[in-house]
Length: 351
Image 1 (cartoon, rainbow, N blue to C red):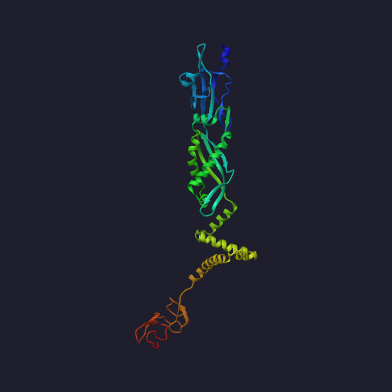
Image 2 (image 1 turned 135 degrees about the vertical axis):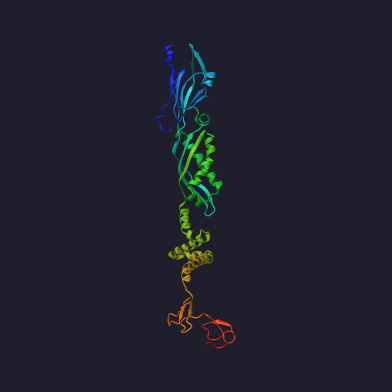
């Protein structure tokens, strides 16, 4: 009897000293579990008994004395009585339900984005996410199997592929532009998080966070984004952007004399000239506008004829008080300017 007792477990527990273990199989070594044994399930753990490949009983955090009462399934299919004591032949797995954070994700290949401003754009992105097991029994059935040890590394590749696939679908469904994506990491990351939740739940997992650290655009697109930003004060219009690009092209052509001739030889000279003309016209108008707004209206002194400000009440040259700039012809009564020498209606000479 003493030898048989040595073949039976009295205390069942798992002290997790790792940082990445998802599932740990308790080393039974063909030993049996005696009725009355003590099972300790710590916080962030779930204990699962498996008999002949089938999940039997599940225990949440707590301390248990194993009896046929709290092992209803295992007692019915795997209980053996020996010398007045019940013993069980089963496998015991501990599932780690804590949150695994700071898991890295990134695009292996660029993701194609159809942008309304820049056409087809290929982007790369990377960031972090977090997850945990929220249904231990489902996770055991769908993912784990019967390995002795299952770590985060064993499933990280599958989860990254799921997230990248969901990110591509979110881009296509939302039709978000490159400009909006570059300035709204948090909002776009929230969209991907919500869309990825059902996929994780199917595996007995919960995705707790999804963060986009950076989105990399091709160099040409990044340059265009910088130029569009610099033109923001002129209005975010594609026409303004085109005019600036045309002006830049002319500057490059000046450095390379053969370039303009090449445009003309290809039958593009007139179009280039028109675009450049519009570009310089816009620039010239913008440059002259402040100067024109600063011109103040003037009039002539009614006594000496000196040019003075239109709203002046006295002449700066002779000091004469200024009369109204409108008078009436003494002959026909028509209203004429105060500086007029003849009436434009009857021709009478005015004093």
